[in-house]
Length: 122
Image (tube, rainbow, N blue to C red; front, side, top):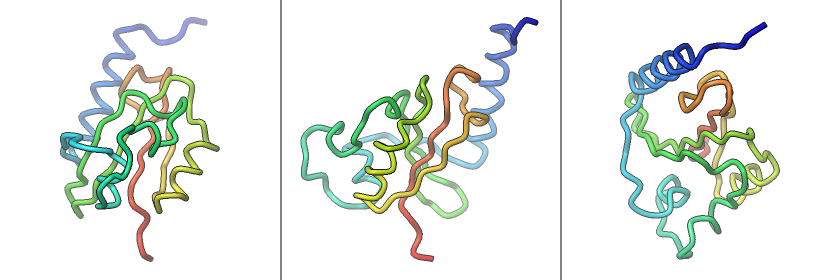
């Protein structure tokens, strides 16, 4: 049995990105994206230090959710999420992460969407 064609994958990616853009507006990454999420200046010069980046930090973009203005850091790695490194970074900085392979628009089927945002006070 054959998998999806390149054209099908491109169409899925465009649809997933359009769905994401319907609820989010892309924001320029002007400094450490982790500290942009928590609203504090970054004490480090190396973004990889703050992100504890390993396999999970790839094809990164920053978005603002339209309904409430929350910043969301999106990563779409090929090898899935290094959950241990991602969890450590989230716990260190008071962030939460959602991992969903079904929402990735960068090479759907080969990448996983990771959406990271500041933890709510609820």
